[in-house]
Image (cartoon, one colour):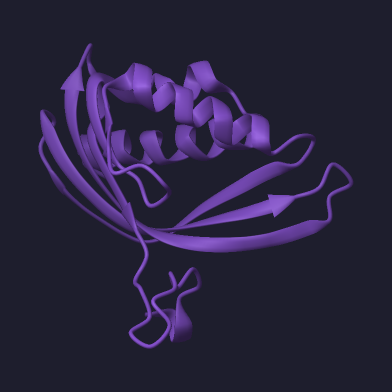
Length: 146
């Protein structure tokens, strides 16, 4: 496995474990201080890690005693040790403190990453969901695997 693939796998694993643990510090270490986020929910864009951190703190706090299990499917990546692009389908699955499923949703995610301090950091994140033509509602579950 090339080093860039290992670096991307590391980012994916840290993302999943940091969300599950609601570890804001570890989660935010994935992001460059000047990151630009185009998130699916509510705000047009977040400019910089400080703005993004406020949104992440609100997300983690909103979970209460629940946790969120993250999984990535159809991961595609390309790049060098200095710059990489990743796209995937990400599933966010809520789990109660008792281990009961709470529901899930899927988003499309794209990252641009660059090397900073010998590790890949996200410099741009774009999440989205398709919108239904007839009802103008976000489609948060992928039908038929595509």
